[in-house]
Image 1 (cartoon, one colour):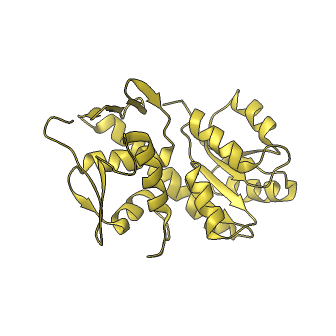
Image 2: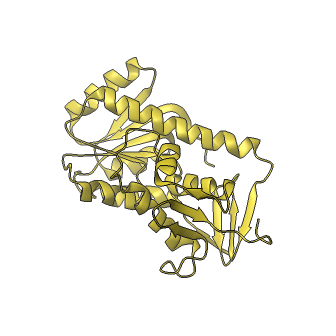
Length: 240
């Protein structure tokens, strides 16, 4: 895990007035906030400092936020909350598919953003604490090896990139092998924020994870759908 600057938030948005408002509000809540206006400036920033969380707008000059989020998911392990003037479900799902941890449509109440920031950071911190406290740190299943301390998943000896949400989901499954976990259980454990019975974000994350750990995602060996109940991670006695 890369070292992060605790309580440091980086806002990537070309709206200077919004950045100033967020900086003033979040700094009153105990956070340190920096802001940049585009992906190139963000890259320069990350060469010097790693924040605990990034707030990323989709509509940016040059490289758009979705492309940036995809790059971040492959290179860094800090959480990302995406902002967008688009409130449609398809935009939200697309953001989750490329690795964002949460999504908030503009305009928004700063208090709601604060609640989501705290929820994401709390979930992330719990995951980090589990790395230290767990007796089992390396899992082996099929052709996969998952090291929860280093955060590395290998498939057939080749490292596979995981987003923070994928990491947390895989860890949760491995901690509860051969047990049916309902969609409600998974959402409560992983999202940690307001959700509805029609929230499909967990299905998006499971589909994404299947493509990384299964030999044939269409016929999964490990992540099984239990119709009407939820999902179950199947492990044999010689796994783990």
